[in-house]
Length: 226
Image (cartoon, rainbow, N blue to C red):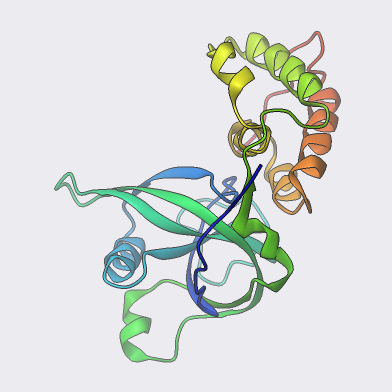
């Protein structure tokens, strides 16, 4: 069964929050501990506007803070701040829910002096090739779900990660695939490839390939460098 979201007007220019090794998929959730002044500014500004932020990876893994001129991948995801807390120590704790992927058209610091002083990157983006991201499927089963779950069990056992397998068995197929794509510690390039898959069925097939490539059937996967 497909769940269609209410129409949402997405802006053509968005604020960017580049993150090493982090991808956000539609309807996925990313918790963030925000402490850099420029991104504190970003959160302040977006809370007063539409609460929309673009999550995107730099092309090269680099040390924090990520420079504002660091090359970025061409595809990221716009998300909405759905949870916010201010512990009073100069940090913000937020959770961002993915809405739709976008293709990057241009990035720059705004020419507006006020935006320049805020310090974060702005981008012109296009959502047209990702229109299906606005719709979700709540079907429990899907192609190769049993295979995905089996490989997931092997992976979690190798990593000594506990899981509620009954809940996983009842999870919608698309949500399960998205969660694995976002949380399994693959290389940033592999995460990006998962993000850019056309459909969640394609993403499931790529997950299977990645699990198998990392020797997930019978041996622990190699250590992932971040």
